[in-house]
Image 1 (cartoon, rainbow, N blue to C red):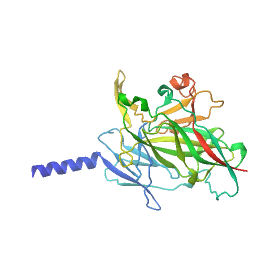
Image 2 (cartoon, one colour):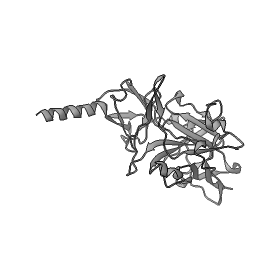
Image 3 (tube, rainbow, N blue to C red):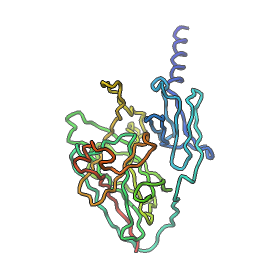
Image 4 (cartoon, helix red, strand yellow):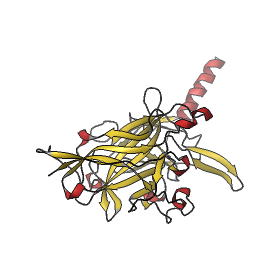
Length: 318
């Protein structure tokens, strides 16, 4: 009987402190994969591919509200309640300033390539965290109808450091698209997000085929962003990994964002500054150009490595 009572207490504790919540479309009742979960104080996480995320009231004792969002849906705030099992998001087309409807192009086209730029200097790399998103501007090729068929993503998997404890990993990333609002990432575009993973075997340039997504560059250009969601388990599912480390300092406990591999090499010598970054759980998700105004103390900025050298392959119609 005593063991039975302990078991009931343990199960109740799990229910109270490790709550599982599913994010669902309010109309279709389909789950919404990889929704963004913000705690409202600079912390957050993501739902997995089944739209499920966990929240521990024991771990976050000072949090009483969550804010759930996904592209194409109105953000929803909820009060923490142990009885909540599902959160319904309402579709909001107004979030998508430009829904792209493209008929298959006919006729001849040429393949044009923009080479990705990379290097092996780990000290000149962006450290991906779950709170950061990096966007790069692409314009039409010679002002002609241009489709992005492949993204060439510079990465540094630190393979040369394996003997120093760097082992296997698989990291899940997301590609998203935004309008060009006077040179700054604007509203989300109605293209399908791309979810993919990179492991320790990949290095230098990761080639991502998006030819089946029909991503055509608008007249004013398009921002393509890359965002880390977290590590994957051996089955390819998103792990509920720790997003922050707590460090004791003279000012008290500081939460430091956990960085994920691979690193993203930033380069110097670009004629134009076309890279923007944002911390999605901070500063109202505001995009900022990656220059001294963003962080004058950044080693990347001080050394002139201010652009992420994302490349692409285009189909260009005459």
